[in-house]
Length: 496
Image (cartoon, rainbow, N blue to C red; front, side, top):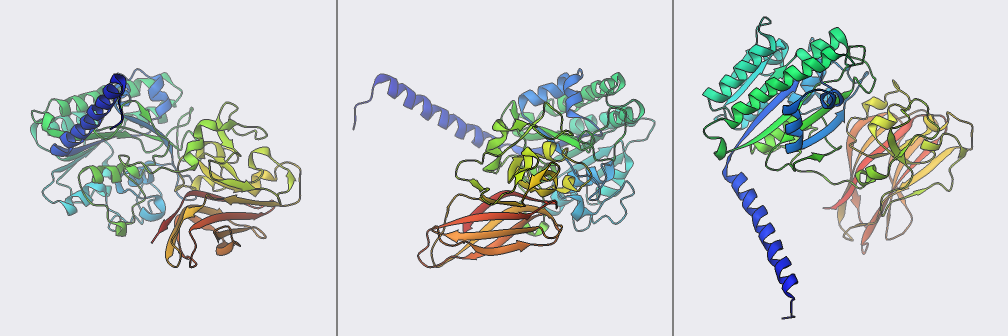
């Protein structure tokens, strides 16, 4: 055995103690009874929560996760409460639950039920409870399988909703609770998100959140319970007041979450609205069946992505004028192992979009609104985009011809592998998107071609790996001119 210094021995002991401590913490959480509380703040903007006097929400952010996010716009769905809460509560986007307005016409809640209904179906012994200031949620979205659904009388509004939630947490033993507070949205409509009245409404809602969270912590059995608490919103508001359109402010949502698996004071940009329902189900120990077709993923189980590592190196606009000057959101420098081949790329054009770029929703969608960029719902955090339409907005020569090249992934010769990636493709001839795979540096072979619109979705391609091959590299080649765009994210190859 090699000689170890006293300092090395102390460091080794400390590391062992830290490891043991983390295992102990996990064991303690596993031994406690999992419970979920979701609080919905209708029409709340995270940026204005930070401006307001909101000590209880500030405390939740300090104790756990803060995740700013964004949603769709038309034609997928307008930024209204019906589509927004349906997305949060079912764990799927509007292209699945089919809610396009506040009338819920054509809703597919039988196929994509709310998370409390899924919890009841999987574990009927669970106690579930929903109380809402906006009646359609408890009357329409939550099903009759939920143990208790309460629509607060309009005369009581959020005060009544809060008192009912506190009483349930104090006097009963619920396992999963949803609470909806509406007055921030009311203030937004009446006075605008830039108003003091909107900040005052946030302050009032913050105090109500504080009452509800205090009721959780005052439970006699609290020490034996493992609570996941999530606070979220269905949409944002304009400064002047109102929502339903495609501005980034209307499309803003967020998740504030505390729980045993979430690091205090953490900030993430990979969280989306459907994650709320899925995170609740995962915390309650309900297996997530792929047949359910859920779009969310548990916030407790982050999925690393190569492109997301670029967020800290993104730059501000160069040629674009619609994007706020101080917003950072693009780079042409790929992550380690990736490359971009622009040897056939035309000259000139808009700098930000010359060849494949790496960008974010908040940056890319503001380059030009209402051209369906807002429908790129399944890409997360930083993603790759080839945008011939925006590139051609300044004088250019030649054509858009750029290839995004992946690292070499390990494969097993003579077997199969599965290529998975998220894509969103809007087409106009003569544009083309092509996916090619090469093995051990050999000639790339086309495995998929895009020559018509493809909505945001996750693609899987089964690859037949040649005998003797040990690695595979993927190329995404986009060719065109003043046409549309192609988004790629979450690329991986898994051995079968």
